[in-house]
Length: 260
Ligand code: NDP
Ligand code: 8X3
Image (cartoon, helix red, strand yellow):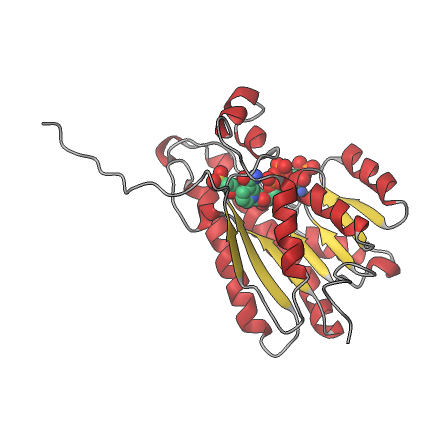
């Protein structure tokens, strides 16, 4: 029997959405370093081109906006034969926009988060699943967040999209029972990538303040966790995995008290 812990990426094909930054970029590089092949997607074509050069024939880049209706199936249909049999789908692309209370939030931001984090993610899952089931192997890693389990002020639609990702992942497990295809919902806390720059629309100070005076997770920390999950034996599925920096935890319930 193959020792999966030694060969977790060797000869395997990983689809990585959101490969132009953060977790996705780190994951694409990790798979390449471990001997795998990568399909890298995102909207920023220059970054994808640079990754393709790094990949030296073992990475194909596909510029893709997951908000486009046929994004998932168009991607799969565009793949060269030697990249078509996807083993790992790192369904990671996503974003938070704004931290305003719901009553002041921008509806266009809400719609963009839903279209990307929910609709885009299910498009990819819908496109890769039949092939994984037919081939009798595959692992979908869906990127959720602690924001999907714990509410916080201003997390409104972002947290709700991540709750969707968690529950969608668990429901996929229910449907895939009897097949060897695995599904994992990965749920990190604060991690310093371009995430907060996007959330605060390029405001570097606001983004830096999120991580001020604490040690956040790094993209490498998250990819270490994903790699650990992928190294586990065939019969073991990690349904959900939640990680946080030691410097992050929970607050008491907030209470609005009447003035005395
Ligand atoms: P980054 O902003 O660094 O990366 C986000 C990636 O998503 C980019 O590669 C971006 O590529 C891609 N993306 C965004 N919108 C689209 C779109 N419409 N179509 C295709 N690709 C898109 O953030 P992270 O790496 O931190 O985030 C990755 C995932 O992890 C997200 O789903 C995020 O919600 C989640 N997460 C992040 C945490 C954190 O604290 N950083 C914690 C928990 C979860 P491009 O702009 O080129 O399209
Ligand atoms: C990103 C982590 O805490 O900013 O999903 O929502 S958090």
